[in-house]
Amino acid sequence: MPGIYIFEDKNKKPLYIGKSISLRTRIKQHFEGFKDGSTSAASFIPQTKFLYFKIVNNDLEAVITEANYIKTYLPRYNVITKDGRSNIYIIFTNSPDTKIKIIHATDIQTLELDDYKKQVFGPYTSTKTAEVLVKLSRRIFGFCNAPFNSASRACFNYHIHQCPGACQFKVTPSEYQRHLGQIKKFLSGKFIELNKTLNSQIKKAIKNQDFETATTIKNKIISLDEATKNQNSSLLLKLSDATDRLQYLIVDTLQHPLLTKPPIRIECYDLAHLQGENYVGSMAVFINGKSETSLYRHFNVHEGDRSDPFAMKQIMERRFNHPEWGMPDLIILDGGIPQLSIVTPVIPKNIPTFALAKKRETIYFYDKNKVTSLNLNIEDPVLNLFRNIRDEAHRFATTFHIKKREMTFIK
Image (cartoon, rainbow, N blue to C red; front, side, top):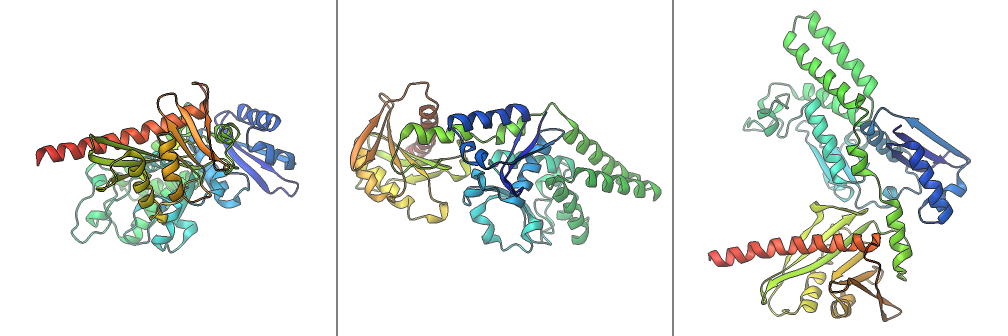
């Protein structure tokens, strides 16, 4: 059955919090990881004195409950609590024109929120998970994309009948805040309390013979019930399950002197051009083994650096002029020894850097100022991850190059 589990120390302080669509299978995997030392379980299981688990109805409840537990207890061995840069949150901006946004942890401080606890929900391991939760919230409750805008412009949600009408001033700011309170309860996992509130509201509406409102509330109750009682759903867990074992495999397989812990944020760089024209570069970003397209970046290669190694060096210099993007835990360069040797001096010395050459999929890196090469089995999961990231960077660069080429042709 799906559920939440917590490994606790002798003082019942959470060491690690997780979720799974099958508690038995997942907990068994942790003990296997402990035995062979391939996962973080090797660190927290020796300290574990209690194992707490909670059965839930489905993956939706599991994802929401896990996020709230992690936010509350900040367990030491959850990767998501160690990485304050890349975590994904759903936030409610300040009232009265409150909007719902999906953002990274680094952007929360820029919003100057009135009440962090009541306005921030998460952390989630991927943007996709947060997007699914926001779409569910919109489908069940509805919310406004442009509340109380001065032009009274109807938002997109209003046109698809998933907005309570804040953009059209059909509700007051205080009424809209109460409406958003239902979504906050939903994201807090307070399903029973929310159900009681909705049933109380529908009784009041029927008593007042306000049957239109009663119908709206009835639809919310039905949608909420479908979302929280459907035991066949596994999409959210598939989207948000951490690739814990693979992260540790990266460390064990590559044996890079600087790579001592699982890399959370991996960046890969590639170039694209046609005989030196429309020269561009790209940065692809993977968080916990999953692509994070919102963090991808394009670069135009300036005149003067018209060979791949020096063009790569140029875009890397410009990349590290942007610390607000967050810092990578590992860098992959599309290329071989020339790219590695010329680019390495501009990369911060504490970031492990690899070059992945296409011809034989050889991995190059510096070990004690000497270049080391590594050829992994074509089915090795670490090599497959590197290739996936490299292919994403290549796709992103090529797409940008084609657009630039088309613009040049049109001119």
